[in-house]
Image (cartoon, rainbow, N blue to C red; front, side, top):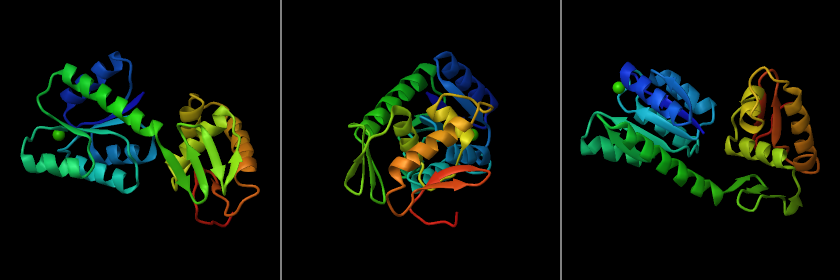
Length: 228
Ligand code: CA
């Protein structure tokens, strides 16, 4: 499980990172809103822990930006402020819960587990759709234009990732880590081959083409045509 922590207070950030790493999570810690915003928008996390009061881009802005892009990653807010206004605003913007500082680590861990469980329940029932392509996560079923498409497990995971992050250019390194659990310098040829197979099944006999190569960058899935 990958967690992102955005927290400018050194002590709190280190304390959270250490505790959650020891609890078995893969933790990325950034100390300002700009880096937090960038990572949250470009990489996939299972949960984001966001400080509300950041010196540059506020936690509220980050969660708003994510939800506008239809990114439903659960967000746990950390706040020193206990004003009802901020709390309501955060929840309205799509944060999943608030933790008021100071907090005990056991509290954080309990919330992290609850939100992750909730997130899984939501995604288990999910149906992703882009144009006439549908992916039913619970039933492991893919249909395009009414035609059932049979995919291997990895092809399914790859398509799910592309559809969840539709419109975003996904670098090969990200696809490798998300779908194959491989790291950056692995042989990315595996990904190109898998994309080719996926295209043959999902795109070749249909229009519009949904899977696009972004030269030198990676792949994206989107409805809009581009000039390849
Ligand atoms: Ca802060």
